[in-house]
Length: 340
Image 1 (cartoon, rainbow, N blue to C red):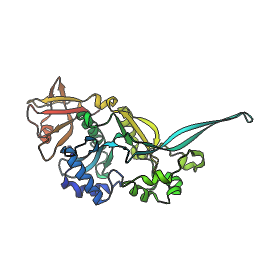
Image 2 (spheres, rainbow, N blue to C red):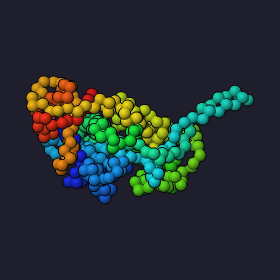
Image 3 (tube, rainbow, N blue to C red):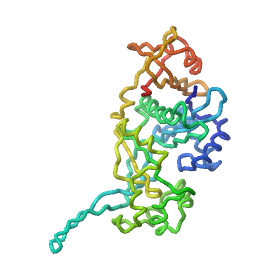
Image 4 (cartoon, rainbow, N blue to C red):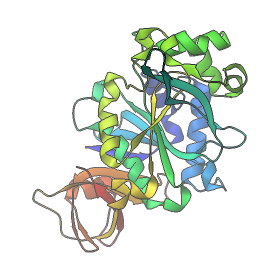
């Protein structure tokens, strides 16, 4: 059984191994950047970042038998501010009609855009290949973010954003960046991706501010706009089932689509429950749920497991192994969402 928990400083070496699987802005394969991320997360879980909207929460999935980290996910309480806006390419249509030719055409168009009020962002979902295909590790890492959002609504904004990975080339390049962004910045995709971790100012200053007709791009690039990569299809379906919708916006670096939903309307947030642990063990099959517990004064502030769980009003019945992994005693309060 896997355990979901808040990242610890002692996890840094394991995180570095995971980051090499998928080097992303949210989980970079850069030791110093990972150290900063872990430190920010530890301070956030401990409540030592005064402004809740400046907090970052990094969750890890630990193999309960070996202690290996199988994956990560995270919540960024606020992505997009006046100092560092959320940057995107808006995707829309322009219609043209020629009376002379009696021809009506619709053209997809891209235009750079900025959001200064921000979203709460879910991201950083990485699963090591050794653990894929059993026990649904990616789904557990996805769902734990919704559990935590529901537990602490006041810490997060009223809309949640997810930036999905698009199809990339076999060597990790973005064909959209090669055909578009590279022409205006003179940077390769890895160079631009790395620089964006410190600042996106170069995008604002070097990208064209007007409309870009998609038809001017190579056909192979046109087909990828708003699409997700093969390994992201499952995440896309999960988000859509949870109430997320495509925003008709894409990432200016790789073209990955942006999905969002009002926080209060996310299905799993609406189905969140709190309950008190009963002394009796659950000894037969029941609905599967994600069950979490918080201990603010402990080294690990948060732990959760996927387990059968029976909820009767405010009473919770769990099997003995789940209680053991969560270190639960009768009367403890748990937090739970369905794992369906």
